[in-house]
Image (cartoon, rainbow, N blue to C red; front, side, top):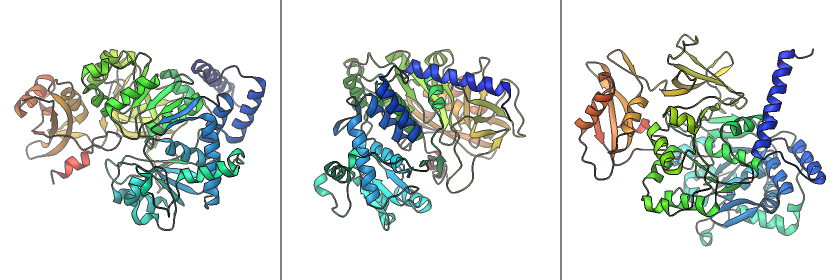
Length: 551
């Protein structure tokens, strides 16, 4: 039965939009006929996967730099051969198509090479959070039951007895002289493949593409695995390029953890763009900015707390660095306070792009610098191909401007949790678990988690509004607000505040500031000064730990 004319027209429109954005980003460009034929074969064979991305880049720009990390640089040709060798080595070690591989690595070439080798084998990659404690890591490994583990040597203790019975490989040694000879390294597998010539032989594409499993943050409970198939086309990448103007063959510093959805998204975009990925294993504000300057990077990928640390650097150190080529500071992973975005743009220019999304739904909206200037604190508007609607508690659409639960539909929704279950769905749209509202221009504002709402004296209060207000206070560096029991009003607010250096602010002054700017029922009942807030590896505040202090 032929498709309706409207569907054909919509499909054609999406195709034209995708091609236009890919041309604009430099993904699609003129190539020699022999390269075009080789590229077409690679993409047809592998589909839009990491295997295809690096195979294609090795054809198009073989001598361009693919990875720049603390061990040096690798070209696309070298990376293609090394991942061929690694895939063959993993297969010889017993890893086969359909197996799962747990990857517990910081940001370095081992993470990238492991991911590409899994793609070439048709194995599924399970990305483990380097910020998790040992019990969380071991629980996830036991639940997901991967056939093999690839990890940095520093995490051997966290893996513990879950290594038993699994094929284990070490990706990085801080001190190679202390390496355990019983555990092969990725480098030993690669060197063996390069020496025996197997690296030259491309692998046969698997009958089924491996999945990517990224863990939820675990800020409210046990982290769960969110399984996602590889995209069927480049339309999702084109949608992001239409909002965030990334360009092909440019250096990108990924400071956000690669195991997290945000860092991994830019690894994936880098595949299409043939980007040089500049990686450092640990985040240090000065070192990251230095990497931006020395690599002449045009894009920096961060989570909000990293921006806060950058702003804490002495102005003279920032001014001494050549950051003129930096056009994009892409932020996601947790709430971006409006004043923080404004301060960064005042320092670096209008370069901040804020993406709101989650592990389960990928992205929802993107705020451009113009959005953030016009409406500080906004999460922006949805890119093409994404639908956003707000629903009330009765699952009905809310009136314009009214708050509601945020639901989204796009091509990148996850397939469900690996342990079973999924997020709520209404009319084909999936819940983000957040509540928000739209302004008159259609820009989304995220008010907070739907389970974070505090009812004080019959009034609904979301901590985010109070947190944003206090973040903007010149004597406050950081803040988190939670709900606490209150005999008179049912619930009240408690603010955990990190003061700026030299501040002598008193709790009464914090309360007065809130009272002067917000409704009286939003004034914290308690204000506690702390040295720092508990955060996970992606910068999200662990409010669960703050609540435990109340019990």
